[in-house]
Image 1 (tube, rainbow, N blue to C red):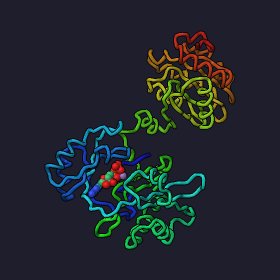
Image 2: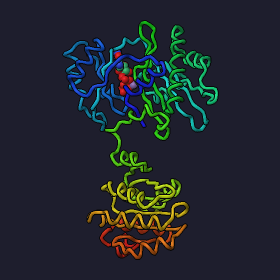
Image 3: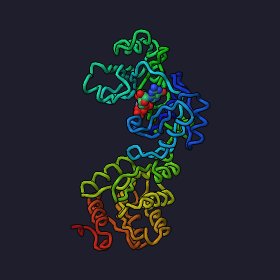
Image 4: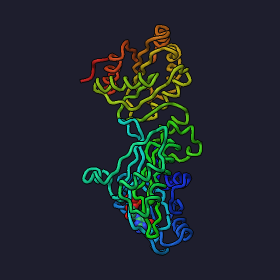
Length: 395
Ligand code: GDP
Ligand code: MN
């Protein structure tokens, strides 16, 4: 879950990292009022979940009210590589002596947190890493011990931060590490971390991603998810407590157990199809849950066929069948035109299949194996009208 710059800065401030004071606003008048409150000169900054805003014209300095109004008008509604600006952050402008870079992330291959620091900030850090790797200090942290002040000082020194700000940089690194570990972030990045002419060290920008699966431990962070940028079906799924991820294809998928769903995506792709979603109905899904899942899958209008891949363990196949029959009853005529391929195997599979065949649902196609189910659903997605002809009709 990615945070907007100003949300990341609010997290920074909670952990003692220095940031400039500012206000988030959504219209021009509020922007001008906020500028008056934080004091000129101000920076008017587009709040979108994409970097390079400065280059795109989404970060502008204003020295008076007229300029603040002009920039706010220009930037609100701006399209920055597909991201429409709906929120501005108005911040008291900083004087900048140097622009540094700092970040904390998880190095999966080393299985340790990694702190990175460079005095070459304010620019694309990938470029620094590529062209002048010696200017990017990389230092692993013992996850049990955390980042000590000593190690932070070593990092700042190795990166050749100006001698008089080594302490300030070390403080910033320790605070950034604290943000990363305590907020369950997957990334905490500052670019640029500035040194002011007064030799203050401050975060001028923020890039923070939080681990969505750890959000339950941080009720105060729940509201940070950028509802406007979230997919509406994913949001609904989250509210209903269903594990759903939207994908780009046209074949709706439901399975029970994350592993089975992942392999279902694979067999569908192998059969030449393209999954429209990941949906894990979980263990012990009852009829009501199945009905809810069907509604979620069909809320995506790209879906042209649906594959139910159920391996009955805790989840009993007869319950899934009952759920599917009930869900079908609730569907509108357009939704009923969408073919379902159902593979039931495991606990009470015979009973489940019997219930399904007795219900005689118009557009439900049983399949005995996972591969057969995948081939069938791919064929049906390609030629839904020929649905009743069964598998192998796709050309
Ligand atoms: P990004 O382009 O999306 O990374 O946005 P940043 O927040 O990093 O801003 C881009 C650039 O604008 C920074 O690298 C600075 O050079 C400049 N900038 C941002 N805020 C200020 C400020 O308060 N004062 C000055 N002088 N420049 C700023
Ligand atoms: Mn930046």
